[in-house]
Image 1: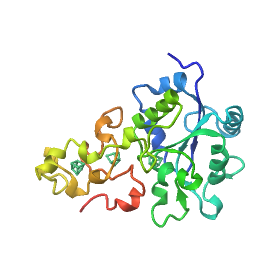
Image 2 (image 1 turned 30 degrees about the vertical axis):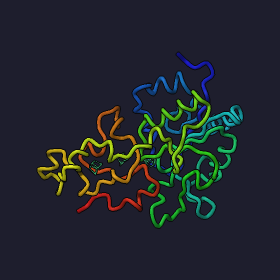
Image 3 (image 1 turned 60 degrees about the vertical axis):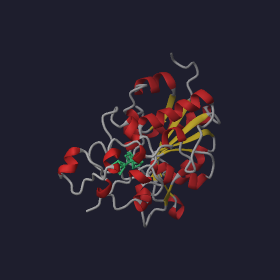
Length: 268
Ligand code: SF4
Ligand code: SF4
Ligand code: F3S
């Protein structure tokens, strides 16, 4: 049944690839239609809304004014901070992303960072990080929920929203502000190839016999032993598969700074 008073969500894009939105759209239970028509009032979302340009900006400003203090702000994308944020400008007034984040987060009740970009800066923050891209918590220092992953699973995004709707508080978080229910388990401990790791059966070369038999990808650079996420359990694309299941090692995409700390992603 529809929730009588659907909570308002304002979703902002900054420096990113929109992959998190794509992942969000692939939710199956509930469906995306149930989410946006029955559960939340998605007042602003660049990619999904009909309006564009001036009309879209007006919708954003009126939602901020109308739902001041009660809206959930979803952030997708890292925020360039160098030189006062001039490397990202948005809207007719060419407002910097940095200014926009500070202005709109001020009146939000909850701030949810969907994806590793808004959680920790994202690939654009990779060394030498020419635009000074940062995650939201590094800029604002206030309470946030980091639903990290590049992209995160729709289960993790929707589950976090549902927790807030049900309990009116953020779920228990780990030291990187990630919900423990989603990021409390290590990839390596839930991986379907783990028995091969324990038996010392490793893929040694792409396409070798071990690869055909689904052996462990550790020697091909898999970062599953260092990564906390629930990908093996929920999989992506409506439960179809996940990186290790598809034959590539985990690259640690839900970990802070994975773009620098987990490289190289493949062993030669
Ligand atoms: Fe794209 Fe990854 Fe950033 Fe999401 S976290 S917007 S998938 S680069
Ligand atoms: Fe661990 Fe990766 Fe091997 Fe799976 S494939 S058992 S996550 S090292
Ligand atoms: Fe990312 Fe590793 Fe899962 S690369 S999608 S955390 S398997």
